[in-house]
Each structure stands twice: as C-alpha cells, then as structure tokens.
Image (cartoon, rainbow, N blue to C red; front, side, top):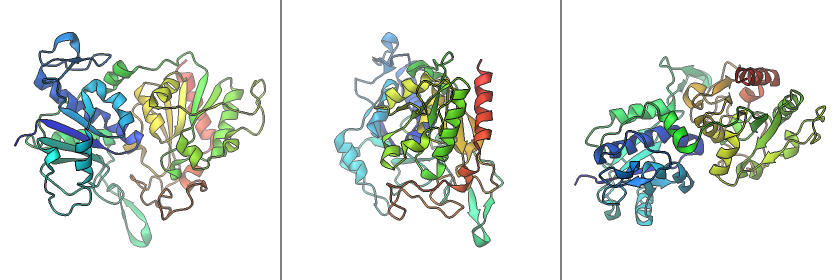
Amino acid sequence: MKSDKLIAVHNGALGDFLCAWPALLALARGVWAQGGGPERPPVGGATMDAAGEDGGLPRVDDAPRLLFAGNMERMRWLAPLGYAPCPPAMRRALEGLYGEQGTPAWPDDLTGATMAWFCLDRLPVAAHPRIVSLPCLPPGPNGGEEDKGEQGRTTREAEPARHVTDALRNQLERASPAALPWTPRWDADWHGTWQRLFGGWEGADSHTVVLVPGAGHRAKQWPPQRFAALAGELARAGYNPLYVLGPAELERGLALDALMPEERPEGHPEGRGVPVVTPADHGELAEVLRRARLVLGNDSGPLHLAALHGAPVLALFGPAPAATWRPHGAMALASPLDCAPCSATLRDLGCGRRNRGGKEGADVGQMPEAAPCMDAITVEAVLDAVLALLNARR
C-alpha cells in the first residue's frame, strides 16, 4: 500500500532541529509541488485548498499529509509549512517501535504512513521499509569523524567534514524515490525563506550584545569567569551586555555571580551586575536575539536561532567540529588546541570526559571545570573577534 502521509520524527536538541529545518522544508515543498502550491511559502503561513487559492499552503481535502513527532514547541516553525502534530495514537505506535528486534510488525495506527526519521548517526529503531533513516552524521561512535588508534590517540579521516544541513540534503537526494511518498524539493534560498516566515535581524542600531553562556553539553561551555571578563570589556567599550539563560543552565548550577564582572565598568549604571533574561519560550528567545547587535556564546541552540534570523553571531567551538555544527552565516572561533575538535557527537571526548548529563557522570547539580579545549580560548581572542564583527556592521 502506497503511503499517503509522512511523519517527520525529530527528537534532537534545538540546534539539531534548526540544522534539520531546511530538510523539513524540502519535504514540505514536495507536497506543495503535488498540490500545485507555491515554490515557497507565503508570510503568515495561511493554508489553501488543492487549487492553490488565496496564496497559502496546500492541503488535500483539508487532511494534513505532513505530520510531526517531536518537541511540540517546534511546531511554531513547522505549522507554516503545512505540518500538523502527530495524533496521540500514532505517537504511541511510534514509541512502540523502540527496542524492536529485526523487522518490526507495522502497527495498524501507522497504516499508510511513512516515517522520515532524523537522527545523529544511529537509528533508534529497527530498520523497516516504511522508515527512511536520515542521519546527519556518518555511522560510528563519534559520527565517523575519527578513529581511535594506539593508546587512544585520535586520527583524522582524509574526507573533509560536511555540515549537518548539507549531509541531510545528501541523504534526501540519495533516498530511493519509492521510499518517500513524494520527491523532496530543496529550497536553495531556505535561509531567506526562514526570515520571510519568521522575521529577520532588527538590531543594526542596538548597543546590546547578547551573551549565551550555556550549552547542551557542559564540555562545550566557555568558563563563566571568561564571560564575566568579556562582559566588563564590552561595557567599557560602550555596549550593553545581556545574558540569556535557559532553565537547564540554572538547574545545573550555573552560578550567576560567576558571570558578573569583578569591577563596575566606569560609567556603567548597573554597577557590576549584567542583566539576565530567561525567555519563557522560543518565540520570546527569538525576539531577544533578533534585536541584538551581536550574539556571542557557546555552540548551542540559541546561536543557531540567532543566525537563522540573520543576526551577527560569534560561536565558540571546542570538542565539536565547527565545520559540522557551525550556525549558518556565523563566525566560528575554534579552540587553538591541536586535539580539538575530538568528537562530532560528544558521546566520548578525546580528553577522556564522558557525557556528564548521564547516569554515569557527576552530579548534574554541579558544574564541572571547563574542558581543556574551551579553557584554551582566551578573553583577548574572543574580544578581538567580537570587536571586528561589531565594527564590520557599522
């Protein structure tokens, strides 16, 4: 039985999802082509009928053909493309596929559906003809980026790293035409499409520099004391530093006091304190980032979001490869250590550290010391890069 709907499954972090958004757009554009819809979605994301009236998005008999299973907050960026939330019965059937051995029996609730399953390098369910695996990294414990040689030393492969967005495009192009219900249509101007749908940068006249000291993995975090020193230098240069934190950073024990400059910058009205905001949702986060003159921080989801909106971004990279994970259009400042980067997935790091967010790691309420590669990035190097970006935008 041929599929009449597609379920996009993405359970990754915010940055992973934003890197995959162009591929999700390509899947949607395949539906539009079938329904006679536009080459790109209109601002506002209104729906339209199969005849393509009203300049909106195509639906067939008002029944969505694109479904999404993942973090429902991401629907703000998928609903304008024609995606609908995966119904509860289908979600339960999807969850039942985890841990299956061999080729699983296809659940009745998924009859007529094909899965486009996004993952890092390992599909979390057994292979099935109805599941199109879309890994953004080559297979292997560290994304296939390196092999561990004698005495645990890392040896690089000769093949250059590919950005995850480009890797997903390659996966879509390599997928068998019979595997998907329709042919994906890649949007060469997907970055512009994002900004037409969700807004562009509005911070050209702002003096606010947003600092993002958190990250999904602690090994990717620059020491908070370095952020504090940088915030002081920015204030002395006439800019207004602003910290953006998520609940994860506060739950992990990121001490706010460690982020504050040791001395009050001359003329700074708020003393040594630097304002801190904790956006309530991704919409509020986007508004803060779009209105900033510059966004600086660790390799993390907020930096990907800022870059998609067109804000100037400086991303700090240590254990993860910038060529693979850099926010689109952002400037990347990589660790000067020869051992960095060491892992595309950060499951195991070259310095012997493991993912401390798991059960085998340290208490999640305590912040570990900085990874050597992040500690090697100096305040002077970051400040020079920040000022160069700020001056370039004048």
